Image (cartoon, rainbow, N blue to C red; front, side, top):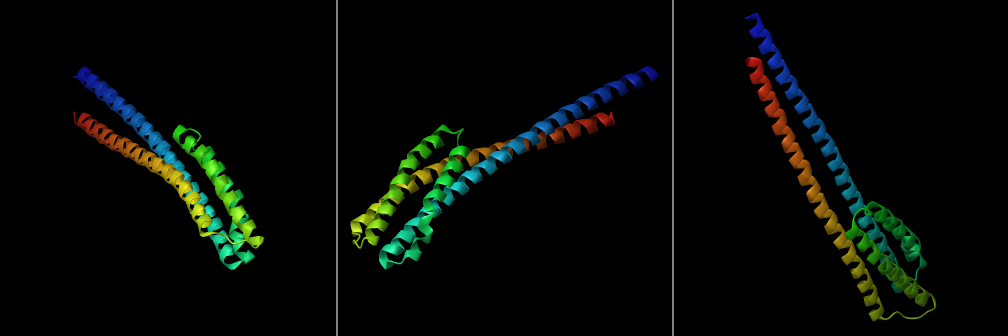
Length: 196
């Protein structure tokens, strides 16, 4: 009887130890995956933040230019003065953030010449106003088209990031569900083993 007790004790202890090792390993891997997914979600939010920042800077520049064209007051150009360098900073940051995504890199390369055309357009309209020339309504419409083209690229980039965000959240939820199932199963098996 003493031998059976020892054998049962060794078997149940070994099984409990294996369950503990498997459960701990699964928990570790799950937590590691959740942290990785969380970092990727934060990365996606950072990309979207920079997209929105670049958009706002360009819109502010355009608004300042329009205010100047209507009023002739230089103070409207405060928004315009540093806008190009600020938008460059946002786009450089975006370029670094999406360096591992070929589609987003293509979008950035498409965006750069559009941004340059847009700021060249703004500079030309401002210079014309300073020289006393009138700005034709068609010219204002051209500026709207430049901004619309930029918005299309920004929207495409944001849509790509939103899709990545959905994938990353789904992955995180999947790992979380597997972890819960594994931990509960391990606990039930351990409880069952302790009863025997």
